Image (cartoon, rainbow, N blue to C red; front, side, top):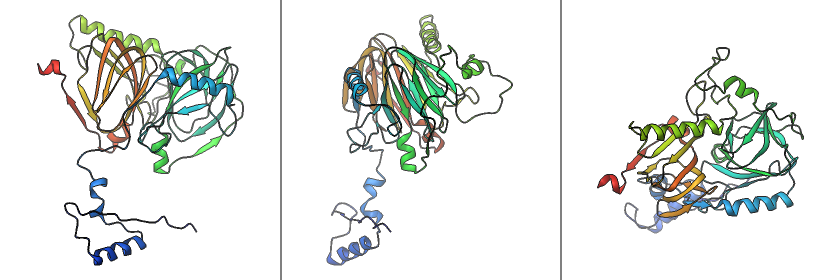
Length: 373
């Protein structure tokens, strides 16, 4: 039988706290012995007036990440046990845990030429987003899906999957998963599959795309709603065209759907119209040259990657100039403002679906200085 972790009560003499008498100290030692903690000593930490995330705003530079991933490709094999050559972003406020935010995991994954990442499955929901390159196929339940620049590839939990690089050049991409959420909920399962990827063919279109990849059309042979999207690839050409048309219509005199100069799309499940994955929301944002967004803060965390362009990002009290590939995290209830230079394309993922289902979501918008003028 394991020994219970000790409880320590360290209440101070602040507002609402009883006077620290010998009798009270004796009571607190009794609480500690029985593994009890009184709410009155902890309420400020457990029930603050507004979210106070331990995660900090932070920016990871692609120019630093990619050389380290390349070096890992030289030194670290991919195989059973380690499973993936994936290098997680560790938020500086989360005590060295490999979490970008309390509920979100993000990593750069790297695969050498002619290399397989072995098959496995897990309950965590996952996706891949390709900021540059091509040559890798992810094989999900035997369906080979090409990964190319700008493509978004979701994959629901508990599906067999492996990766195969059929090309003569290495490739890197980012992974996003709900690992921290499932880790803290104690809901994780994991299972090994074959050591080798079961189908290493390289079709131009996967079976999922042949069935589901026709915008606005749903096969009548598959009417049952699914909690996660059955479409395994959302291609860049569709995303790019949708964003370009939003900005073009705005230029022709139609009202902006979000705010002037800001086009945005959400990746959706074609069987429900909802989010592609039950625990992750994924979006793509395009800011026209010279655009500044309103300040926005919301309950829940998000991670962005710059796909193309340059600009300035402000999260809370932190600001960075960002460019191609850079990744940054927006902790819960930290205000975000984006400013583009010659234009800025951003991929975003967040934990919003979880908070919406729990009715814990909240958003606050602060107009820009131009809007206040």
